[in-house]
Length: 359
Ligand SMILES: Cc1ncc(COP(=O)(O)O)c(C=O)c1O
Image (cartoon, rainbow, N blue to C red; front, side):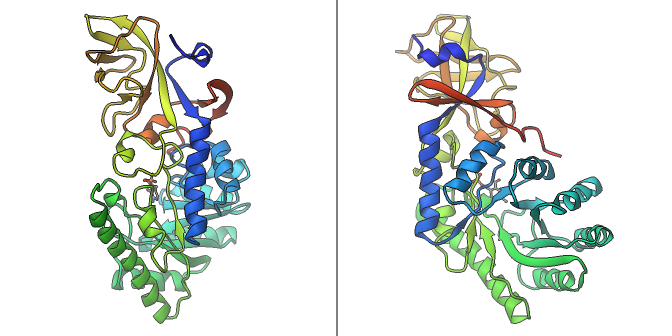
């Protein structure tokens, strides 16, 4: 019935296909090398220092994180070049940013005068300098200052602010990730990249020396990473990929699944798994079966996942099945460790050290 490694894994559990993970990491690293663009993977996807290390060994020049908690975990694990691809505004989090900056290079994004002033005051008190990137809103509308005059004004304020140094620009075109028409995605992504490059030209005409522009995710890296003037890409999802992403980007294989057990049969074709919403995020739709594409999940409650078997699929109680989550990042955040499978054997368990570090 199941593969032998199934016996050694308590479910629900996260499972990594090691060979596919390595291949995905290499595919992105090779793209970066071929296109002479720096690669700074966003580790919010896996939150796992072991995988971050593999990305560095494949050629990445540093990492991105989304939260100060993630920055702390990775700094404690020896990562020394970290970009918080986000704003750090809350007072305790700013204090923690100063603390890790005493030992490690941790850059942060800014998009408001208030945050610039607060960061500068704290850095001044500790007598350290913080390197910041100006976050430019390229259309996502989530964070970032508008390009042109508003960004120039904020850059000039940073220049006059003690203890902060403006070292680059960041933009994230996350609103384009899931576009399926490639020409349309290309046109729109290039407009976003032009906005960033034009912005750095404007700054440099006004006395700045900006030669660092970081952008893009796994859905747009292949366009942004080729755009002249973009110096770095910061994709996150590519080591694992997921159902939603693979519909839009064919370059990567799905390397992460959830192993679950069929606990109950409630009708001729109705079954229930031991994997509910506490074990699989439904943020981007319900998970799908890796090997039974006609069987469909119907409802996920906390500890239970109900499904209807496809016409030709047969299941039995106690059977283990693999599912592909709709969105991998919030799913990973629910688990303590990955089970690593290579050539049908369980070879290791890797801690998801930064899980839950959303603060
Ligand atoms: C600022 C920023 N950069 C990069 C990424 C990576 O994007 P993806 O997971 O689509 O590769 C994200 C993802 O949320 C992000 O917020």
